[in-house]
Each structure stands twice: as structure tokens, then as C-alpha cells.
Image (cartoon, rainbow, N blue to C red; front, side, top):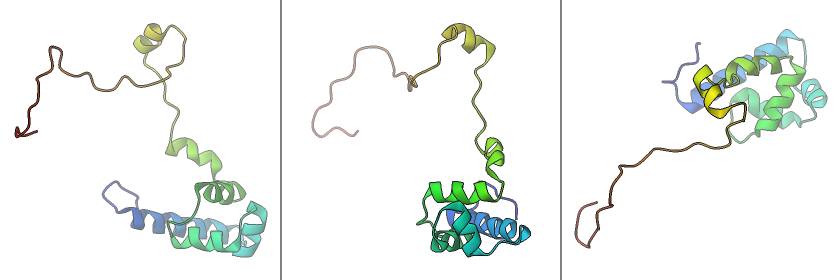
Length: 117
């Protein structure tokens, strides 16, 4: 199954769990052996493979590390690179925060009770 944005969270988690199961079985590891090598409980591995949402992200990372999948995280969340113009604007400094949306300039209107928002 291809993971696309239209899928529900539960479906995506189940698919990821199924893929972890396949990776584990492809390496001929039991759930207990994988849990021991990853430093998590067997129940954590069971939850990850079933797609339960009560697992911690750190457990997911540990299991993926044992299965040799951590390098693939780079494609999941690639490093953000600034455009050449943005690099010139920031002059080598790293951006610290977002500016947010700029509101309409001018004097704000006064609100009174009974007016619709």
C-alpha cells in the first residue's frame, strides 16, 4: 500500500507497523530479540507492529535503528535548505523563528459588544 495524505492516521500507523514486521521478519528476528537489541520492551515492539498509537517515538527510532532503517528518515523529513536569496538576506546566520502572517496595516477597528466577529 502506498502511504498518501488522504489516508487516516490509523491506516498509516497500521501500514508502518506492517512494514516494520516485514523488516523484522526479513532479518529473521523475533519480537523479543528485536526488543532486546533495541532496548525496549517486547510490548513496545508489539504495539509498533500493530499500529497502536500509544507508543513513544523514541521506541520507534530504536526499533528502526536495529532494523537498519534510520538512514531512511532523511527522506521522511529532509533538511531544509534556504534559497540563494534567503541566504543573502540572512548573511550566513541561521534563522531562529518564523515571522508569522503579517496583518493588515493601519489602525485597528474598535470592537463593541453585539458585533459579529
